[in-house]
Amino acid sequence: MGGQTLTDQGFDLIFRGARTANGWKDQPVSDEILKKIYDDMKWGPTSANSSPLRIVFLKTKEAKERLKPLLMAGNVNKVMTSPVTAILAYDTKFYEHLPFLFPHDNTARSWFEGNAPLIETTAFRNSSLQGAYFIISARAHGLDCGPMSGFDAKKVDAEFFPDGRFRSNFICALGHADSSKTFARSPRFKFEDVCKVL
Ligand SMILES: Cc1cc2nc3c(=O)[nH]c(=O)nc-3n(C[C@H](O)[C@H](O)[C@H](O)COP(=O)(O)O)c2cc1C
Image (tube, rainbow, N blue to C red):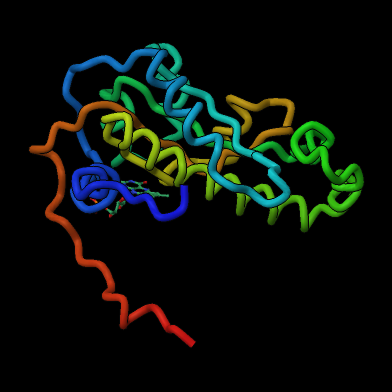
């Protein structure tokens, strides 16, 4: 695959023209597209192929009502009017799956077992990476995203993951944006401002 690139249209779809959604058109999102989003993003790399991300898609009003009181006030409408809001969480026991996910080294599970700081760092880092793959995949499949961290994570975990194994990282509303609610594009740093080539 090396050497191939996306067209300008492809770059526009996932980066240059893609915007964070703040409101939604009344247009549903099918379960088939949610599956396609996952089936592409799952190939994004994670350390030791640990793949700690777990996703709960809230589609029904009843499911979103469970999240509603746990949101920052400014995020309530964005979630409640969205066709789908995903909770992107991580598995704190991701290493239990390493015999399946990383079969070429059967010691991989022992690198993590009992090492709480390494488990937390690895799960959070790699689920955040997978969250970015999720956004890019959703955009590539023609959806807009509204990622949000303005919620009470402890309460979300108690509500949706009561056995304590999974922890929320961020949530992401999905659908077709009502672009009248999109803010003006904020600036980004230039290459020279934030990158060094040594
Ligand atoms: C992890 C994450 C958390 C965010 N949390 C919130 C939030 O709680 N509420 C909100 O309105 N926007 C939230 N945002 C949206 C950002 O402010 C927005 O993506 C950023 O300003 C870039 O906007 P643009 O994609 O339109 O250029 C969040 C974005 C990310 C990636």
